[in-house]
Image (cartoon, rainbow, N blue to C red; front, side):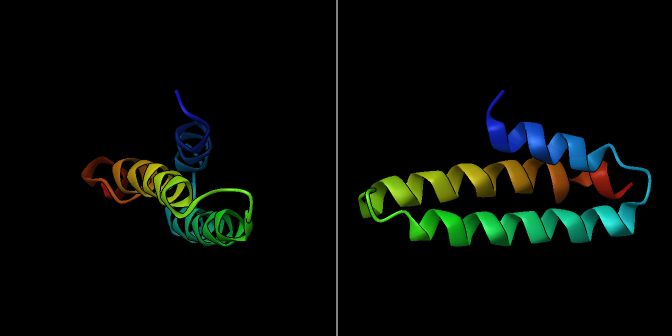
Length: 68
């Protein structure tokens, strides 16, 4: 399991769904900012990191099983 998946799964296991969604979005946006600040990566490497983050977020947090 990748690091982003591990973090989002931990967040998704919290009891308060509304707070969890907010926490997940805060983590997501902070990670995008951090990735974009990595000047030692090429654009394609940054995009790959963001895609990995986005994929984990969409599957775990915005997926149909989380909201039910």
